[in-house]
Length: 213
Image 1 (tube, one colour):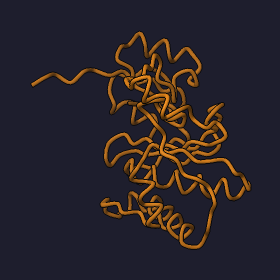
Image 2: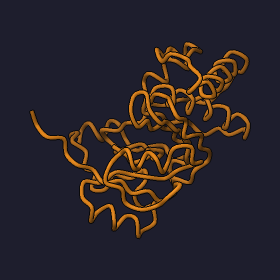
Image 3: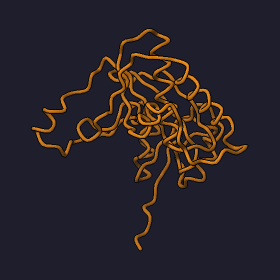
């Protein structure tokens, strides 16, 4: 059995900032902290360097990305439509601490963020992010398209339901209240926004990615 590779965790925004050598210690700094910012690294030196840099240089970016698709495939897919916003979610565990956000696809400027929630799943976060994006664009009367990298979230939105198997409990009650509101919004509102699947294999991680993979 192979030994699990050690990770180091940089916390830029949390109860305490710094580099932590275990997920348990990192989790203690970000739990119940609004808009916590953190990321894992393979080495201590890399984590320390990131701590002393701007977190925006690391979050939501995958450095050195090179597509494995052929030139013909890439040409067929084309480039992203930058007249758009992108949404994504991140969950540390399944279930685990979850948050989601939306950004301008071109500039990566954050447009909205929710969480972290103490107990959620990535699928719930992707669903909420997508509905939040739809409501955001409708509120601003924007004709921009909306990117997500989750086929499951797209399916749930089309069906106007959140088909999660996560049991509802006291720990995730606030999250399920948001889920109910999202489902009701879909049932009570119409929208003209085009929802498009982000082509990760061609373009790299979606711009709203939290960069914690």
